[in-house]
Image (tube, rainbow, N blue to C red; front, side):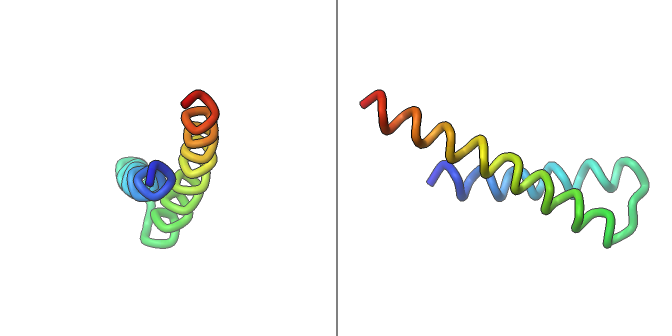
Length: 54
């Protein structure tokens, strides 16, 4: 569940960031994808840490 939330939040942040930088739709999609992947990796790490600690 953490991973799914991280993907959605990452995509939204990337889309917004590219828009602030004046990017067109392709730039926004690329930023959204990269941010979603990065935050998904953080979400997986957080899931593993939480699972191991409990």
